[in-house]
Amino acid sequence: MMLSVQRHLRLLSNLKFINVNLMYRRWTNYTGGMVDYRPGCQGLVNHTTAGIIMEHIEGFEVENVNMRWRGNHLKGWNNPLNFNPSTVNNISLLRFHSGLYQ
Image 1 (cartoon, rainbow, N blue to C red):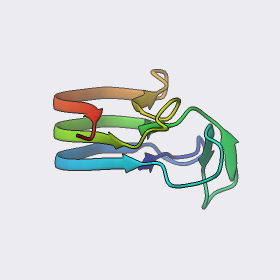
Image 2: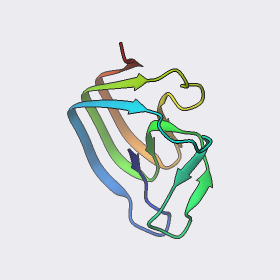
Image 3: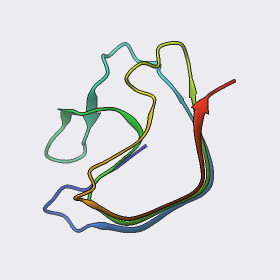
Image 4: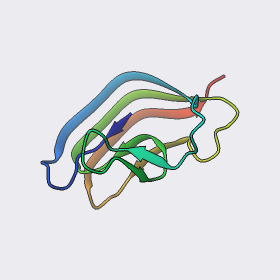
């Protein structure tokens, strides 16, 4: 899941993820380290991979979220959260868990 807005657009605000279960499994043959900004003007760009990538957000709340990672090839893409503090404000994490799928 990627939440992103380009700089020339307005900020996303007051996003909430409450009571969410996520499971990530790598199934592509493409190499990691690319993020798809389409539809939009940038297309694919070099970027670290994460469960939730946040950019240009004002108010982001996570409550009771369980993020699981499945598979043996997790190196480099099992980072739970990635954000640039200069474009993301007012983050709240309550009962957030990230770990391997058992």
